[in-house]
Amino acid sequence: MNDSPLRRLPSVRALLDRPELAGLFDRLGRDAVVRAVGLALDEARAAIRAGTPDADGEAGLAWRSRAIAESSARHLRPAINATGVLLNTGLGRAPLADLATEWVVEASRGYSNLEFDLNSGTRGRRTAGVEGLLRQITGAEAATVVNNNAAATVLALRALAAGREVVVSRGQLVEIGGSFRLPEIFEASGARLREVGTTNRTRLADYARAIGPETAAILRVHPSNYRVVGFTESVGIADLADLAHRRGLLAIDDIGSGMLRDGLPPGVVDEPTTAEGVAAGADVVLFSGDKLLGGPQSGLLVGRSDPIGRIEADPLMRALRVDKMTLAALEVTLRLALDEPRGLREIPLWRMLAAPIAGLDDRAARIAGRLAESGFAASAEATEARLGGGSAPAVPIPSRAVRVSPPYPGGLAGSSEGDLARRLRLGDPAIVPRVNAGAVVLDLKAVDPVEDDAIVAALARLAVAD
Ligand SMILES: *Cc1c(COP(=O)(O)O)cnc(C)c1O
Image (cartoon, rainbow, N blue to C red; front, side, top):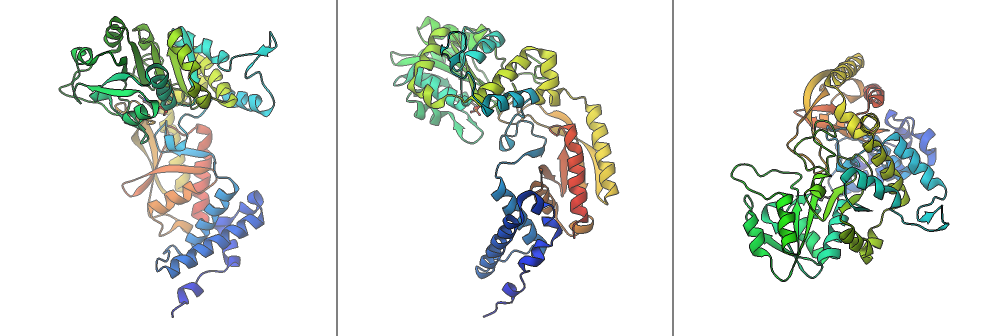
């Protein structure tokens, strides 16, 4: 029996003295850190017994201890998004405006008039505050809100077409974000999917031929995260709405992201606007609150009063309704969006998109210069950010990044770019970079300028550790 790898493991004491764990005692308490070190050592022993020892040594164990301590103290933590993907679903999509977070705190710390009419002193409507704002933005007669756009789609299909058919182009049977797959959404709703046309071409006549006594609606889905190019043909929502109405059916338009108008938010073109579907005659238009609007996760439904009323009366509405924190954040975001100059200053997504490249240039050069002082080979470079979140795939967004190339200094000597990225992710705050062509790349497009110092400080700390 050879137990030497087990005996070579460091002591709890030695791990507690490691620089990787510095600062954790104050924040999380000594007991929590000791417990985390014990768990990390248990894992390492189990790995050795299983014949899969970790090659990272003492530093690796210290990092693992840190990760366990951090996540047992608090799983959901703030992160700095240096991925260059602005609406990164993994990182929570749109950051909220400061004013929105203030309203969220106020609405949730105490009581609020969530479903209470302060004037009459009687029961009020939960969505009353945002309904008027959504009507103003989209020109629709009526509006309501649920938890996200996937919920909005299930609910609209169920309330308006359960047990009946809904006609959809084969070019629009999309999967968005891994778990939103249109055929599965149909199954969940109880409406039947009637596919027409082909992947690349669907004509109005295809829709017209598919309509029968079982048909309740025509659905258009914006293929948010891909484009069919080349020999293609699709039918616009105006023609679909016209056909639907001539045959006594409803037209539903799932536009996905919802840009407010061409160029709003800045740099976004070629996406359906929140108002055009309504203007073109769609009975219900669906979009997400945390994509181009830059608000909280939510699914917004706008359209004619009758179908919106049927949607609100559906029992599933009760299961999908939003809470007061979402409503508070959404109301602020909609108010800011209606006041365009203010929206551009205060909605973080809009502000990032509007930020001039010269400012990013300066920040990248400054960060690279400060990292060089800590011994890093760091350089500023031009790069392309993306919107992400299943929206506007075709739009590359000019950006600037800081590339941090090996060999890494001091305590990081011998580390790979993957190690460095992991250590940045496990820091406080978590910093999430890209790993690209053998280096760590920090894209600044989605990094708030006030976060630049935290990036420099985190790397400087890592360089001196050991
Ligand atoms: C993103 C998207 C959805 C899903 O929206 P969530 O708010 O993420 O649930 C549905 N349909 C389209 C067209 C989308 O782009």
